[in-house]
Length: 166
Length: 405
Image (cartoon, rainbow over all chains, first blue to last red; front, side, top):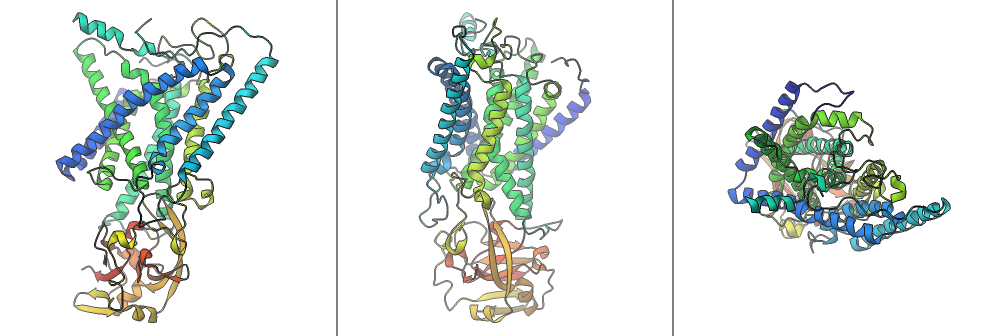
């Protein structure tokens, strides 16, 4: 990409040197991975890394796209921005809470690990976020009514997956 | 060929994504903080790995006593904050996944190399966050060793991050230098900021969508919420707020347990009247029962115990100075020690206690915690407690201390 106005161009030499450092660090990591484990373990680790990419790109990202498209059809306009905020807050929090919500690491001999009611905690946070979304939406709707009539709804969200260039 | 080109037409392209929020000005700002989090995570991870090494060419300092607690708290906090940051970052750049490579061998090669570096970056980043979160909840459904694999992949992540910055440096500089609503760097077929779509000038607020600034604020809020909801495991002030923290910080004798006696396969028979601690220095050896240890001068220290898995807690420990034990076998206080536990299962049954800790007055072979005799789960009859060390090295059920030549 050409450098936009106002920013001095970055010297190519600097970028090449940085790139070389990065490649060296990454190769060191690959060597560590390979030299300190059995091939079957390395394969398992690679499988976990690849699954992460596939789950994001082929499951999570399309799911969010569908949620946004559906949300724009069913969620009233003043509630759209608050709902998006709620989705980002609660979606990311829920994903990172999967290990505690599922209690997969629970051990009968160690009651000090996973010693909270995580479902209740999640419900409490989800309730607060939802309350925030509804209150913000109602306030925005009132502000909109106060501002007087507006033009009819434009088409929903512009971020639709579909055939190229149409 | 005709089938292929028809297929290619059906696939989404970069231009299928029109949201003006997916802009380099947004991606660079989220990416900057994501990079900060990953760098802090990497450096604090290196500290922990060095601390766990047997050999310390540069002595690991015993002070400040809270150093390890803070670095490992930071490790888990920045890793947790990185989850929402990474998700939003990936969302903003998702259209790039469908970018068509340029024509010609050279363009294809450059594209392939860049894609490979992105694959390494995303794969390793997701791997680190997922395995790290699972490790803090002690959930290990895989065949590899968590510690060595998490460490190796961290080098891959930081390397591919540096490559990514090198590749994107001109765009990053331009994007960070521009206003977040600047459209100069946007993909050509993106909607203009502050509008509802092509050809309209209605402000976004009216359309109901989020503005770029709104998305950024939401992202910072999501990172903050993630930290607040989990950091209570290591920040006592947050205990009541952190509803998703892996531990409350409470437990028998006011302290959580990482590995129980049952998990380590240590029984009451092992630590009964027949229990003896062996202190060895070359050919000089003394054997001490629990009564012998209690008869020695007792010292009391306040030291935190901090686990790599992201929890830490303060406690008051009472016991015998390790240096005093060494004096019994006429070993100098600046000796390196090998500490052996009675445990039959689990890692770290034998650990190193380096001279920098041995010569510190706060390093004890503790017999009591918080005013009570250690319970079996806390390492009865005695355990090592030293300042500024990983919890896994605070060896429990100690059976021998050997001076290394």
